[in-house]
Each structure stands twice: as C-alpha cells, then as structure tokens.
Image 1 (cartoon, helix red, strand yellow):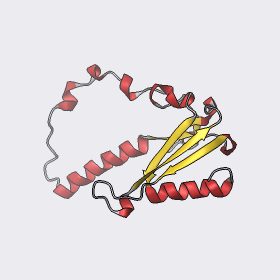
Image 2 (cartoon, rainbow, N blue to C red):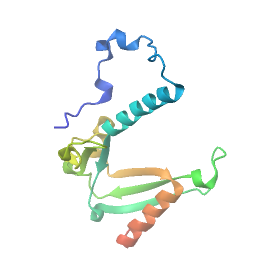
Image 3 (cartoon, rainbow, N blue to C red):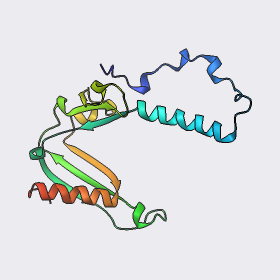
Length: 155
C-alpha cells in the first residue's frame, strides 16, 4: 500500500539527535569520493520519491485558455519563459483520477500507478472545476496544441 501521509503532518520531535551532529569523512576519502557519496544520497531520495497524476476524461473539458504573454520576465530568455494553461471541467475529477507511483522502485507492483486519495493541499482538486497547468512556454504551448488536435472543442 501507499500509506498516504502528508509531509506537513510529520512529527520532527522524534528525530534522533545523533543524526544532526557533524560527522567526519572516512580517512583517505578524496573530494571526488565525498561528492560521489553526496550524489548517491540525492539519487536515492529521487528514486524513492513519487510521481503524482491527476487524470480526467478529455470530454469533461468544457473550456481552455492559454496564457503565454510572450514577454521576458525577470530577464529570463525565451527558452526560460513561462506559460499557463487553464482547463475548465464540467465536473470535478473523480476520486479514481488521483494516482501515484514510485519513481524508481525495484518492485514491479510499485512501478504502476495506483489510486491514492487527493494529494493536493486541502484536497482542493477533488472539488475544483478549474485546473491550472504551468510550466515552460514551449512545453505548455505544445500541450495546448496537442489537446486542440485531439478535440476541436479545445482551441
């Protein structure tokens, strides 16, 4: 099971004080070796993380707007510009639309998406009809064009 828990609910009072004390690297470990250990730790964190998904039928989209101002913000270049796609649904997503999977589990059962409770803050997506997708301008524009090619109602 996924044992869904919000990280906001975790109790930090149970942390082991020894884990917060400074430690020294093994004698003879080079700077490159220390960097490799550090990177392995980050990779482990990433591989243990989850991919979250919200799925709803394309037929439930009753409106869409693309906001891509085409202006440079904060001195970012064109390749770093942002865009926003707003999808309006005719009803909130079904409970079965929320799913998660592990990024890099060795267990086959955890490599497939499994239904989980609404993972958004305060379970907001379960009642929302309007959903915002933000990201890089090129990626969001491509997504909007693809959705428009699948359903002529979405332009």
